[in-house]
Image (cartoon, rainbow, N blue to C red; front, side, top):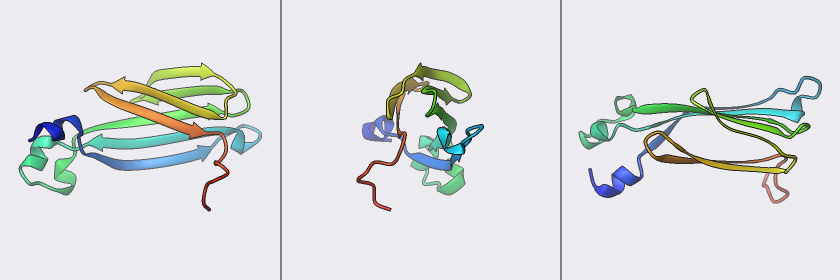
Length: 116
């Protein structure tokens, strides 16, 4: 593979879920989960496609209580961030194993400019 492929691995989505899970008012607590993988560069180099190229797969979950301000980020089941803030925007970056930098940006409510 070329050096540029090594720096920017191919990423594929496995699953995405967003659940409102507050005890009294569902919309006050959010649980958002992404499951994704980095394609296997050797398989890509051999011209393989689809599931033959599945590589290292990960799971990232944010749990955000809008009411209390508690924010938790789990990467592959491990806590990578915990904070307590009533800001309307949550923005966090971290480096995963394999030197992959991940960034999550979440808004307490949709931006006013959002298109329906």
